[in-house]
Image 1: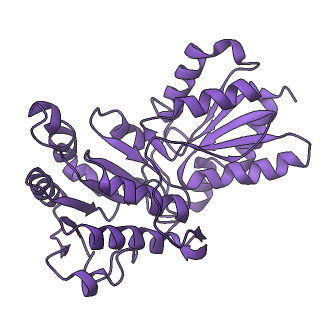
Image 2: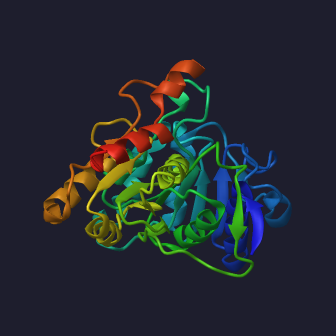
Length: 325
């Protein structure tokens, strides 16, 4: 195993796949000459050249459409958005073309494309640059949605996403690019749609994904001091959802807390809550609690932002509530 940063894991995944398959290329704002806005494509222009690492104009609608047309003609593009907030400019291409083309063409066209970049809040960036969109994209048949939480998962999942014949939304975090973690030395992939139990426990299941899962780990450490054993499930992929992993854990612990950095209405936690209560209701010993951001645009003030975001103490309180403590 080696220890590398999250951004390096992303770069390794893209570079290894581009060496393996000449139909793969990267395009987006500042991915080439500047080595990526967050240096996730550092060195790739030097290795692969300007035909395969392509700087685009500030026109998400335009280069998203170009990439989709390219995918229809046998290429496998990776599209980097400087932030998924900017993907809203190109969302018509993602939803109405990338996601639907396979069905609308009767299977004549696959769209093997990855749309990747940072999502959700990243400090004092304001309301228009701090939004989580995983539930928006996960609501769309034809898309797969991946949100890794550490370098190992990021590399393995991105390699699988690039090899997938369907469009994949691959969501990262500006606040994770510098995170370090152990990554296998050799070739490996992680299948899409498979959750992982990051920590075994017996008293309560905590489900989360992406950078906010760090708060679940902090909470579990604190609760362990009180002999409360938390099982932590990292979804990794939110479409498709690994319901089997969720059900297996809840059947063991009989209690569920879901932590998600998203607005409260109609999010991934809402769907998990429905699936659990409708399928394995009899295993529940307490109502499910979901923890989300406040139901407002993201504040700029650091004081308000701290109140807006879920944190480990929110998780501790929720766990104690489902434990009736």
